[in-house]
Image (spheres, rainbow, N blue to C red):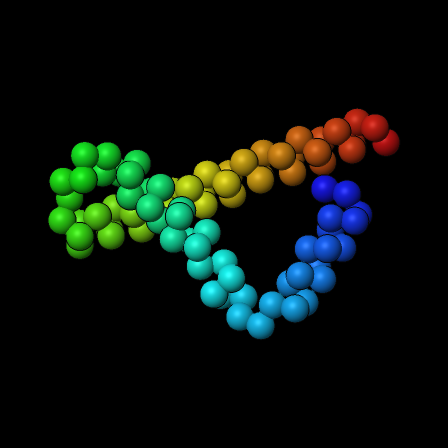
Length: 83
């Protein structure tokens, strides 16, 4: 993302009164995606589905954290080699 786009994003967020409402469609979409992944046939009852989606969300964020650790370790190792 270039500087102009980044500046525009910051200006847009500066004018946003309700950040939660602005990002709600993305959260809803992610929840629906997870629901389709854990129950592709749509056979789970709502309570079970909600629990499964919660677990899938937690697994997703843990996978992101693991990847972040790997990337940081690799970057740190590369910096050590360069110096």
